[in-house]
Length: 218
Image 1 (cartoon, rainbow, N blue to C red):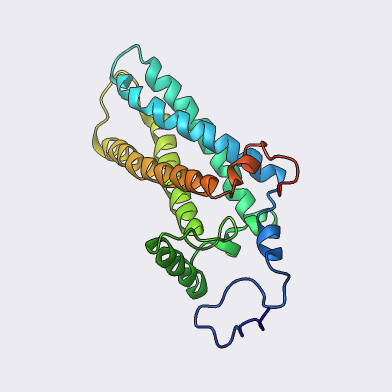
Image 2: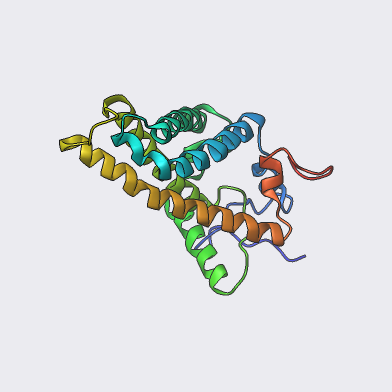
């Protein structure tokens, strides 16, 4: 094996320490704690259910509105799960904290560009769960669902079923419905990335859904 590159001489240094055992830090970062997996499971189930049920929520204008009612309560459940994720991203284990992975620094953005360059060469980036392009996609997804949750809670409190939304409430309703585009786009990207990684043997989804086989990192 050759000598590891100097971080000082690398314009886009790797996150991994040059003195660390190869793969050690990535494996440690990919060890997913139980609360994170439970919150992720709740977000996945409630988020998808809320998006799907939202396609039937237009009956809020009628006196009988089961579609709107179901969508409203699923949305509230998703908002609670999202609040837990935000809280865990502030107070949880170091690897899950937003300050550790949200791509807001020069080095983290450099990893995003490097991942895009690898994808352009039809190579799959090999990074920890929230590093590089994966971290950017996760951050965009969280913002999209925060958008949906905030506007949804406002509608839940102030929208009167059986009547059309008017004035500022109509604007909130339009923003809520427009957020579906970003949320669906995020889900498509996220699921697509999971499928691609699964085909290349990186089965993170098994750990997230408590399906890890014996010997796989948890």
